[in-house]
Length: 247
Image (cartoon, rainbow, N blue to C red; front, side):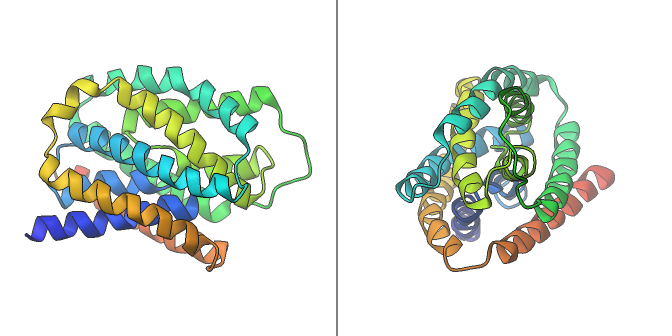
């Protein structure tokens, strides 16, 4: 019963993050699946991709209805990341669990800094080559660590590609859906190994949380949401780093 309650609560937090911030769901999902529900690192990253695809698609629908998605830029950004996502998704099977856990902790800490430092968009035009390059890097990260990449996509869209924050959140959901879907396609054979008695409730509350997150984003200041999210990321980084050092 305790594990089920934890799955429900953790799923809701993941959905809220994706819906409100356009990212971060997988950074919270993977450690939740490992430390709260007992998944191994490889199983956790696979399960995270599945949940992130479904949740991001749900949140994307809500943001698209509000006109907050840059479809052309998002398609270019996501398309460049598909092949790297698939390639690194296959590579993950051959990487030791401790390496995956440590890498995830480093990424979480980096993401916290990126979220806090996301600048106001400068007045400049988007460069397709730059967009494709950033998209390819995030795609590789998605496949390797089982993360959607939205926690880095939003700062990249704002700071590097000059997209306003509101549109960056919606556009990042498009990027997450495509990249996570491509990475998940490389791991379909692992789905049968997952504990669906816990993953099902986790995914269900994540989907509901995505809708609530979109409404929350309209009521709370973006800077407040960013600070809370950055704090969660730093906590995740500390826990996973300690796990590697003490394990």
